[in-house]
Amino acid sequence: MASPIRVMLAEDDPFAQRAVESYLSRATDIELVGIASDGEEAISLARELRPDVAIVDIHMPKLDGIDVTAQLTVPPLNCKVVCFTALGDDRTLMRAIQVGASGFLLKTDNPGLVLHGIRSAYSGDALVSPKLVANLLRVSTTQRSEPPPGLTLKEKQLLGLIGSGLTNTEIAEEMFLSHNSVKTYVSRLLTKLRRPNRAALAALAYEWSLVDR
Image (cartoon, rainbow, N blue to C red; front, side, top):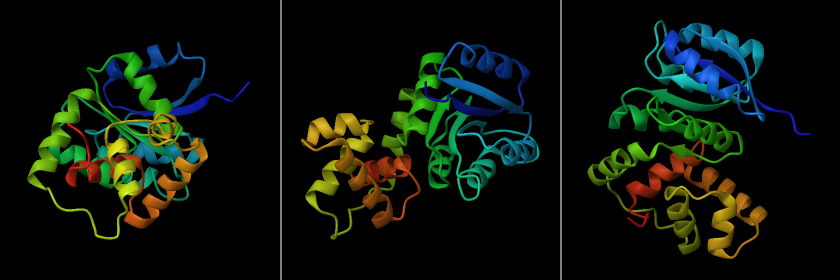
């Protein structure tokens, strides 16, 4: 049996802490290993526990969720981060993605979506709350630009599918490729475009109008 996904929660609201703890406890493949109540504690606890995934509230005392995300997602921690907030404004969403967040969810999203976000982040996929997709569309409209000339048609197609939220398995079926080939192409895109993760690639796909709307 595979080891459970080790999750840390960084959240200052006791009610939200209890709610997340409650529905994480029902997932047999996820283990909540620690809870931090402010940004500084989140960094300290992550260094101690080395979680696979961290759920990080954007608005926390001492150190906000963006700064926490920026520190958790780089060596030596290399933790996947799902940002969690009550209000998902455009600027915050884009900043979270730019510093390395693998997902962005609202506190009003259903528990199943949060669990899906954790699993997606752990497996290297990205998940943005459906309620926030309009924000990405709005940002892409105001910041629209053309893809670089060095991007191939296959790479543009792949970016568009990532932006649409497809997993590697779904992309493999869509592009008639093996799962391993898709993983290789995604890895090359991350290097070529100098982006930290799939969420950042998805943001580019919207900016470059590569997503079917």
